[in-house]
Structures are given as structure tokens and as C-alpha cells.
Amino acid sequence: MNLILKPYSLNPADAGHPSTPVSFANLSMFQRFGAPFRAEVDLRDCEVEGEIPSDVNGAFYRVGPDYQYPPKCPDNIPFDGEGYVAMFRLSRGHADFKSRYVRTQRFKAQEAARRSLFGMYRNPYTDDPSVKTLSRGTANTHVVYHAGKLMALKEDSPPVLMDPNTLETLDDYYDFNGKLVSRTFTAHPKFDSETGEMIAFGYEAKGEATDDVAVFTVDRRGRVTWQAWIKVPYVGMLHDFAVTQKHIAFLVIPMATNVQQMKLGGVHFAWDSHLPTWLGVMRRGGDGKDIRWFKGPERCATHVMGAVSDGDRVQIDMDMALKNQFPFFPNAYGEPYDDRAAEGRITRLTVDLSKKSADTYGMETLYPIVGILPRQDDRYHTMPYRYGFMPTMDPARPFDERLAHVLTQPVNCWTRFDHATHTTSTFFAGPESTLQECCFVPRSKDAPEGDGYVVGIANRLIENRSDLVIVDTKRMEEGAVATVKLPFRIGAGIHGWWVSGEQLAAAG
Ligand code: V55
Ligand code: FE
Image 1: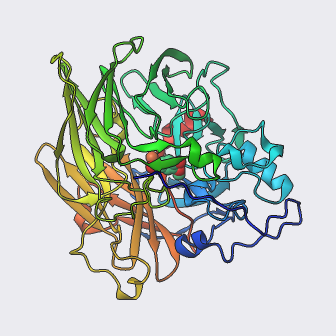
Image 2 (image 1 turned 120 degrees about the vertical axis):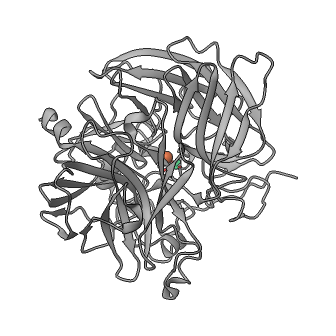
Image 3 (image 1 turned 30 degrees about the vertical axis):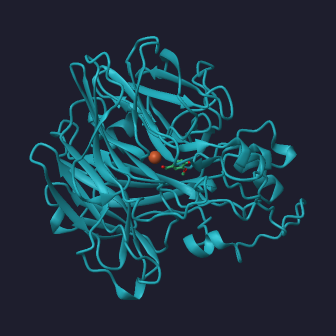
């Protein structure tokens, strides 16, 4: 079969001058996924239903793409909206909300021009010539906190620093005092709570479509202390990775970087179902030359729940599907998008490094439950772990019939997975709701693993509003212990992070 490459068009309304009208009407993306929110909000003392537990003191940050201006290319995709960070500051039973766009280089240039200047998702060929020297980063994928810095992340560019209290953008291109050798920085760094280190990587690290990956460590004071270079078997989306106390692992999936498609004005990736997957495992702290690649069949997996090294055995738990899970990244051979094949289940990938001739990895589906965006207790990123959390769908839970035209299989549950007992418990958000990613909040600094709360955004589809819900991980089935109500609906969220009150106080 031939690779199908479809030419993409420019927005006919974009006459290329500052009088370009601002209208999100008639763009199919916004008809399907809803218009961007665009408003920046300060709301002191949100309405609270139930009681925010007194041990919940800190800030929950979440980020997602929210189009600043109508896209320059009407076929652009939801993942290319500008990063929009929302913060819920929770303390003494009160909840204060604040949201800001990340002032990326891109945001500021477009703000001045009063229109979109950047073209398709991760495709510099489609940009206005005036932005050639600017970072394309949208900072729309994750927001994390390390060494006193709040970092908004997009995997095609360096971190953008924000003030954790005011959400003011402090640095639109943070290169770790000149020590960041990669042109990119992952949206999924890992944190070692024993050493205080952040372990991170950048892919396409030497420029668009390069097969170079830089792997590095930043110590608790924010200094780059180790780096190594590796090469991937083919260039594709390297969204997340796994770090254990001894090893670092990457899964290369057939979401391949497609320069031909980019030159025709398309998005960065196309799903190439002829490609295998590759799991690469290397020693932490080495020079990267020891990396070994293990082959597997076509699969899609983007997020790691947790990972463990037991001697030479490495196991990585990811939500894994048979095929492309992103409807807006085209299938390279024109195959229709397959909803069933896109269902992800927590799958354990294993390799045994003591077996010198092994060249494939093991794969075992751990639970039948379908979900996306798995998380864990973030204090256990690099350690043996027991508990995971994931937004899930459960066809047995009721769903409001008035919403049947919007969604067929809603993600309206958060499930806690206990790998030790192989049991699950589930929070159900209600028949009129969908849930975004959940983030774990420990009950106290030294609480046992998984003991605390999960927090995240619920969209109330009938009321067209959003809530922050707080669920006790020991009583998932009992419903939210507290609901922070917003008088509006915020846009799509991707990932979020919890920063304790103690950390915020130390940051000043
Ligand atoms: C993801 C999200 C992105 C992206 C690549 O899996 C992968 C999530 C919001 O942007 O560019
Ligand atoms: Fe992600």
C-alpha cells in the first residue's frame, strides 16, 4: 500500500495582515471539541461543595492547549493550542482559582500580530516567515515543579518557567543556565525522591526529525549533572519514558515523524502500521552506549504508570493499545481510524538484561479495564510501586441519554489499581460528567504510598461547567469528599501536578 499524503490548506480568512478577523466559527475542530476558552481568570474563594480536607494544603496545576487565535491552517489539531495553565490553591478549606496563558515566544509574537503566525502542529514549513527565529513551543502538555521552579512543558522545546504563585511567565526558553544541550525537553521528566533529582530527555534533540536523543539529570539545586546521547531505531513520538533506580527505558512507537507529510503542510506525525515497536533499556548514569533495543509488534502506548528494576529484570507498566490512539494524527496508509483498536489497557512490558541473546520484550495485559493517562504516587517514579490511578470508562455505569450525541463511551471514572492484590476501586463522576487526568496528593509528606487523594477536573456537560473534584484514595467508591465549583467550563486539560504548601512556602 502507498503512503497517503493529503495536501493541507491555509485558512482562506488569513489574508496575512493584522486585520485578519478573529472568528472560531466554521472550523470543524472547534465544532467537534468546543471553542477555546481564552479568558484568564482570578477567582478568590470558589464555591465548595463538601469539605476540603484540612490536610490538603498546596496547589494543583493543570495545563492544556487553548487556541489564542483561530488557527492559521484550518486543518490544524487540538494539540496545537497555546499552553493555558490553571491553578487551584487549596488551603484551610478554601480554594482560590487562577489561570494564565503561558507567555511563550509564540504567544507573544501572535499577541502583537493579533493573529496566528504558526501553521500546523510541529511543522515549521507552514509558519509565517516572520517567526523563523522563534521557539515553536506551546508549553501545553505538562506542568511540573522541581528545584523551586514551575515548568510548563511541550516535548518539542525547552521548559518555560512560571511563577508558582502569580503564574507570570519568568523565562520563555529555560536552558538550565546554558547547560541544556538538547533543543527539546520531554513533557514527562521523572523525579527521584531519594536523591531529589529530575531525570529527563529530549528527542529530535539536534533538530527536526533527527534520530538523536539526549538523556540527562538535573540535581535538587537545578544543575545539570549527567548527560548521555543515544540514537533511536526510527524517529517517532517519544512521549514518555521510564526510570528505575538502575535503568532508563524508552518505547519507540509507530507514531512516526513524517517529513514528507510536513512538506505538504501536514502535521508532524503519521501512524505507520508497518513499523514495529522498540523498547530500549540503558543503565542510569552510564554513557548510553550500553543501550539494548528489544523488538515488539505494532502497538500504541504513550504513558508510563510506573516501572521497576529487580536485578537485571526491568518491568514497565503502560496503557497500551493495538493501533493509533490519536484520531488527528493520520494513518499513513489511509486506513480508517479504529476506535476499538485504540482502547488502552495497563500492560506490563518486561525484559531480562541477563539474557544476552534476548531481542524481544515480554508483554502482559494486567487488567481488562480501558483507560488513558495513567499516573502513580509521584514520590515513587523511580521505585518499586504498588498503586496506580487512571481515568477509565465503565460501560456498566449510567450515562445521561441527552449526551448520547456528544459521546458514546465517556471517560467518567477514576480507577485505583492495587498491583499487590490485583484489585481495583473506582470513583464514578456521575452520568452527566467526563473526567480529565487525575493527580495524586499525599495525605501528608510522609504518608504511605497511595494514601491520600486524587484530584482533577470534571466537566459537567449538561451545565457546561467544570469542577475540581477531590477523592479519597481509600474511599474511591464513596464519591468526592469535596467539589470546587467553577462558574464556567475550562478547556481541555492534558496533565497536572501537585505542589505542597511546604514547597510553595520554600519557594517564597
Ligand atoms: C501528547 C500531547 C501533546 C503532544 C504529544 O499524549 C502527545 C499526549 C498536547 O500535546 O504534542
Ligand atoms: Fe503525556
